[in-house]
Amino acid sequence: MNTQELMKMALKVREGIIMSTHSAKAGHPGGSLSAAELFTYLYFEELNIDPKNPKMEGRDRFVLSKGHTAPGLYAALAHRGFFPVEDLITLRHVGSYLQGHPDMKCIPGVDMSTGSLGQGLSVAVGMALAAKMDQNDYRVYALCGDGEIQEGQIWEAAMFAGHRKLDNLVVIIDNNKLQIDGKVEDVCSPYPIEQKLEAFHFHVITIDGHNFEEIAAAFREARETKGRPTAIIAETIKGKGVSFMEDAAEWHGKAPKDPEFEIAMEDLRKAGEALCC
Image (cartoon, rainbow, N blue to C red; front, top):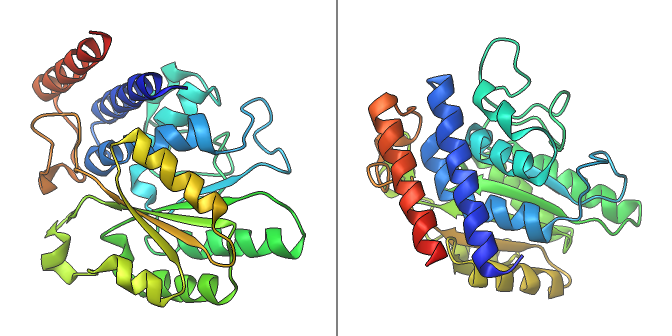
């Protein structure tokens, strides 16, 4: 996909996030929207995957460590062809396979069940180590939240990854600077993130997480980096793309009601029209 096509797909991912959380009357739109470009680039450009063969042995692995942003992951998976887009509106419904957090047992394309914050990176590190031990060339990607990295287990995993020189691991941190209780820096600041990860022997790249050119360049650089894992710090806006959700902590875990749903979908419609001009 070219940049224009990726931008259009990111809008479709955002529409899926809004439609699914509105239908569920629950969920986490804010952090899903901030990562829309990241989900889009991963699933439409970066990952070696096959929707027709989700368990392909040599596939790249992705772990959504901040598992509550499942609406964004599901929208990307659906548009990539892992399951019908129409199923997105069954999010969190009784009997739906699209649970509030990713479930590897029943959702095609999900490599790890997540939701307990801080644990996903450890799993990704284990996957990356397994690839090295088995002499496989698949790569492993983990998406973490900036609030999530307040968890101590994140840093245990980072220390291990750096020590083991896992250059097949890419950790992406969605730095939207807000968590459920407010500003990340006020709750328990993990900043500066870059210097901390460098101290754990990571190659660190900081980008605008909504700019596809910067995203693409960062993933290329990660592939070229040898002898140490890469961390991509993506500077983003919580609720990106929906006017009343942007940079608002209250939309961390609250679904839009009917009037808000209409406004959100109109915002995304106008953004789509602007892309076509």
